[in-house]
Length: 127
Image (cartoon, rainbow, N blue to C red; front, side, top):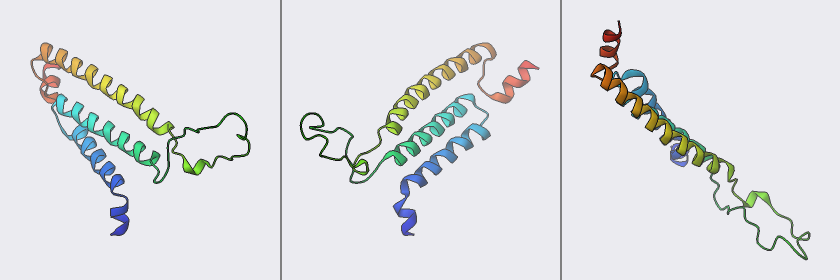
């Protein structure tokens, strides 16, 4: 039980990912599918932020790193957080918002053309 409580953020990631995957695969409404995709993307962002976090660490800014005596002070990299996952997830957030906006615009065009956003009704009108 302690293992489950200690890694609650990974359980949240798995739960969100499964909710998003379920919505993308099982729903016929295109808007619900897109919302499921957005939840799935949020789960992946939560996962990467979780693996990038480190307890007791600080940001990787070295004060007094230049000048006399800089070579004498060794930097212990274990005391610093790796900023790369967080920076990549900022990019992923921008991409997910852009994807959501484009997908909703496409769904709006589909609704204008076919009069519905239900996948099975659209397939009947196409055939």
